[in-house]
Image 1 (spheres, rainbow, N blue to C red):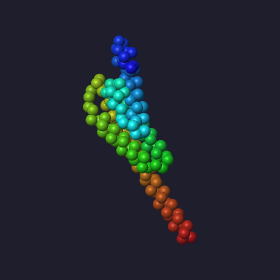
Image 2: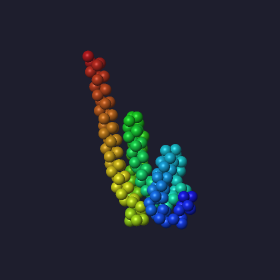
Image 3: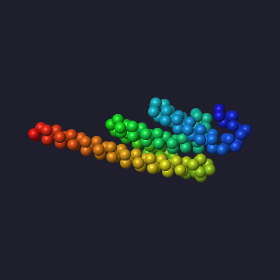
Image 4: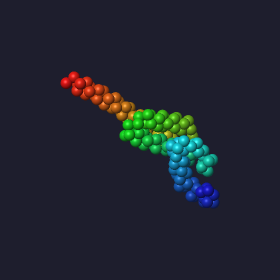
Length: 149
């Protein structure tokens, strides 16, 4: 619909405004679909260009990072691990598209950022899991010491 309104205004259509809006729309639609169990919307479903959709997909990695961190805070390590796996899957998918930035609208930079987020998130989750194990061991020790005394 938006594209129909800007078809006679290439300075707007190709100035970056529309592709940024398409990217944000794709990101929101993909996150909504994955969190609700709905089918993943295609670029055609959303009425946007494929490059904008791919960039939206790359941005979903950041949203999943937030879910991992929220899951860690709620002691839901299983959910945190699922979202980390999803982040890694998305990263692998976007890395398979190796096109010049003029065609991919900056996907390479977003894929590099996604890689960094995946690595930081893996570290955060590993730290949380190790801390949880340490807390459990400390509680067991306290229990043994209390029973012995």
